Length: 306
Image (cartoon, rainbow, N blue to C red; front, side, top):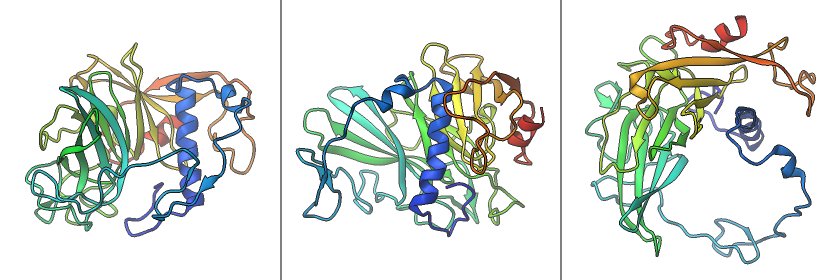
């Protein structure tokens, strides 16, 4: 995840460190409804994990799982299910159908699961393999009715967020492009958010939402009352952003990107020292950012320097 070269693995410890920072940022943004204090209630858990005879997923007693889709399964569009499934969102479509939109954190050189006919960016003439797939499910049985690729030509689609207008914001966790690190053969800058409608029936137009900023995106969370989008950045020195759209639900129409600054504290990581003791309140302000397409990948640096 955080600044890991394309070929590197990710240990459990590094995963927990990286995602823990993102979850903490979402708590601060107000996107998590339940108060953090409730997490420390009298709840004692669901009991010990029971060994799974199939060796796939151990669960507590009386819990079960069901596999809906596997790597390499044939899809309705002639391709196969790509690798590296990541963040996803579930949507009601009507007509007794659900759509599960699934990110694929693929990088140039990974197998795309078949040819991609349209998308955002290419490398050496072929669309890069990241993006999303749709799984359409029957509401009553959860049987898979069809699967297909819905976004192509992106890199490292890690997390994202559902929207009140029934779409999935899929986020590139990669800031690269021509002449940049890992950018050999690329034709466009990457590091964007894309809006994929749940109603898609195939590949959608891959339009980057440049006003939401170019950085190492992780998650996005839409406040349903205001339409403001809170965004996390998966870097050790990443900051928390919010996007104030000019028109709710039409992110291509532009808006203002802001970064949260905590008065008197430039580094909130708490790795070596406790700069932010648990339970203590701090004054914050939101500052406007300009040049948000950030060809130098410097939004976080400008936020701290403000």
